Image 1: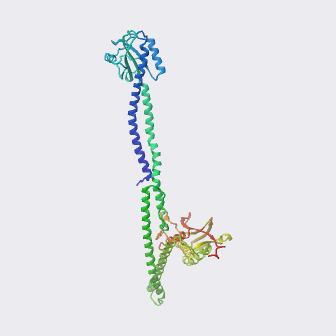
Image 2 (image 1 turned 30 degrees about the vertical axis):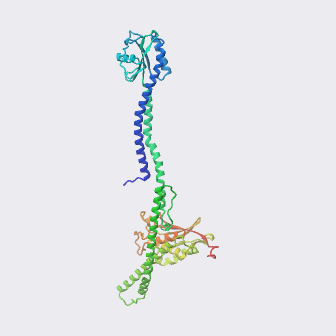
Image 3 (image 1 turned 180 degrees about the vertical axis):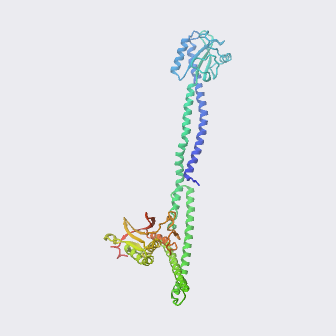
Length: 485
């Protein structure tokens, strides 16, 4: 099932909510601003018509068409009109200029409104049979007002323009709102990603804190530098869970240790007694049974010893001291322990030790018995998975302040889906045909011993065949320290 991260989900929600708000706001802004633009233009035209009327009023009733056209040109040049037309009528609706032309007269009711009104009257739609050139009745705005000429008579002054200027302003505003609306999701995505990053950052810290929890770190309280109350409460709850887990581990370790100690003595007694049995004159079935009992007792004794070693390691995290032992000595002692198993399975052990004056003196401080146990487990594991007549390679290498110990086998390698869990307790790879594999604790013990001595251990498959376990341990020189330990 496809899953999105919390940060992506928060970002998408911010985009959705912000875009909806933006689009609704755009529609409201469009309605309000477009009406405001048209209304402002109408108000401007009304105020402007008063000044034009005062200019024309002085010339009535003897104004000519040429003078009206001159005023029209002046208005088009100085003011933001796309088109402009002026005309003068008497109170009967007849045109004062060019009375014989075919230009239609104003509707009489509109003239009556101008007569009865002291100020200018704005008409949004006026029917003209033949509107002036360049005018469209659909977007024509007309202002009529009553003026008194120099002869003392009243006349009707008409000023007409179109609202193309307002339409252009509305169009520009609409384009701006459209671009803003289309860009809103992208801007919201950027803002959402930034905001969600801030919101998720504390959770990421908590995730890293939890991911860093290991058995050896269960003694350390969980702390995080975060002012958020929710995150602090979460960390407190996690810390309580850590303490409970630590307590459970301690109880489990005590139980395993106690049980192992209780089982160790009877198993040792049974093993000794099975070895002292006189079975030379017994049947083959009895001999096979006794040998099987001996083998199983030996195997059970090793398992009990492994449990005790694990308990020892867990109890000693961060407390290791001990002597300074040369790496060459550790490897050679381990080879002495493993040589019998290698010969039994026709496996050759190929060690490459330090051989220069600078490297021979390199050693590690710690419990030499545990370190030899670590190498024993790695080498025996390599022997188990190496085919007959194969070779197990052991190599020492210095790298900066670390010494690397390589243990390489020629087995089938580790499946990709198991390589991350190979150091878990009771983890076993079942691909080998060799019998006598361990009980799944050897690598877990090896890893614990390496970490107990400030080092680490990891594994990777070789390009050709088999795999290589690598132990990294901090080195110290044994030249000046051997006499001090």
